[in-house]
Amino acid sequence: MISIEKILSQKNYVENSLKNRGEKPPIKEIISLETRRKEIITLVDNLRNKKNIVSKNIGDSKRTPNGQEIKDMRALGEEIKSFEFELSKINSDLQKILLTIPNIPLDDVPVGLDDTANEVIYTSETEQITHNNPHWDIGKNLNLLDIESSARISGSRFYVLRGKGAKLHRALGDWMLDVHTNENHYEEIDPPFLVREETMIGSGNLPKFKENLYMDSETDLWLIPTAEVALNGMHQGQIIKPGELPIKYVAKTPSFRKEHTAAGRDVRGIKRVHQFEKVEIFRFVEPKDSIIAHDEMLEEVVDLCKRLGLIYRVLKLSTGDIGFQSAKTYDVEVWSKGTGEWLEVSSVSNCLDFQTRRNNTRYKSSQDSSTVFPHTLNGSGLALPRIWIAVLENGLQEDGSIIIPEELVKYTGWEKI
RNA sequence: GGAGGGGUGGCAGAGUGGUUGAAUGCGCUUGUCUUGAAAACAAGUAUGUCUGUAAAGGCAUCGCAGGUUCGAAUCCUGUCCCCUCCGCCA
Image (cartoon, rainbow, N blue to C red; front, side, top):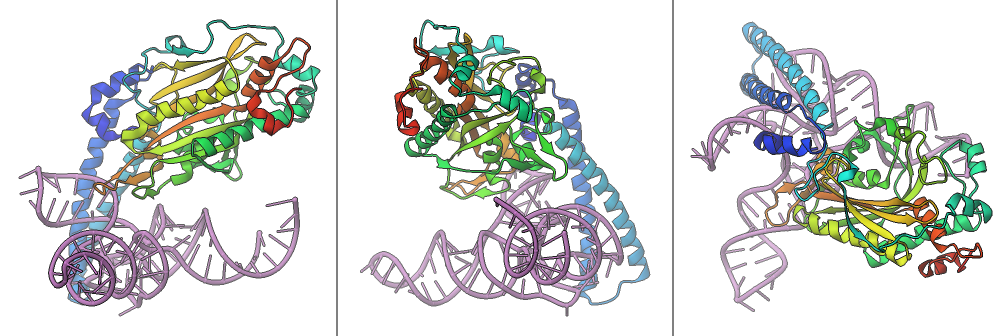
């Protein structure tokens, strides 16, 4: 969440920045709640001080309190209690509002209310070739993809991969994990896929995006829509020791999404499904380092696309299109030759201190020993079934076979399908 | 799921309901001593929040939430987490 100090001290800036996202936060209400909150704190503290002095006096002199004292103190206690009640109400109201306010975009994010304002900042090929053999046909013909079975098992928007299709999928994931751990020096994490509500709030997925998440109401656990949620939760409530930043995590997990909002869209194939695998890279960094870290992560993601021989482009998302928790986002898309469209395979975001404030993840700086909120960054590296789609459609030969990218051969054990 | 035990400061570990924000030890920081280091000695060493230019002070926090009391780390209730044993189980 954004800090209340920022809202108070830079009211207009905050208001304008959020307007660019199409948001109108109740700034006035926040300010009045915050003002009242401080008033009550001062009041309650003074009353408690009174109470403490009397109690201490009784304790020090080792006597029993007289009737008048007991009466006064009881009244004082009641007064304190009623203010405390108001205070807790204000705190929860304030919290409720603050949790629904999205992050403030960085100044170099293109202004616009939707994806039409996104800027394409790089495209690897000037021309995109199309061949009219979508992955659902290729996959079926070569017995790599079995939508009929997944429909029997789970319904629509799921997939079954089989044989070499499954192996290719696994090879892609393993290769990505190896690149991130061996070359980019991330620590591999295998986290839980079910998380507590607090963890979902920490990442920014709750309370606002409940309708897109699966959860078990018996245990109050939520299925992660991305490993970002789990990785971000690793240091909830912790103070990270001096010298431990940057922390770099990579995880391959399933991602569970209801995709209610997209009903009817992208129904064919496996581009948009309820459960998919994704390799996610995540960093906790010192605030001064997040801008550079963001560009590094974009490079790491782009490098994967290059090495797979895919056609890709990089978008800088507009103020209206970046995610709730993000201050700046690059999307990386690969070209799907079979369907003639760009597939988003990565979203690389700098969330600044937005998530660490929600998580209460802090960092003790070695210079001045003050505690600060570190910045977090996340990026897919990469989203799997979509990359699987691209590799399949991209590798399709005249004779109907598939050539596997060279990098993957030592993971698959074969060069073609 | 059943039965027990436990959650206290960076760590370990005390704590008859009344100067306990908290003994003691370790660690860490600084100083004295030393050519330097070690040892020894001395001092300091949690977080949040409010008032204040500052100095300083108030308040809160002993897993979390309530309750009892003039007064709660200490008593009561609920809850979460951890450990041990039993049962079940990939």
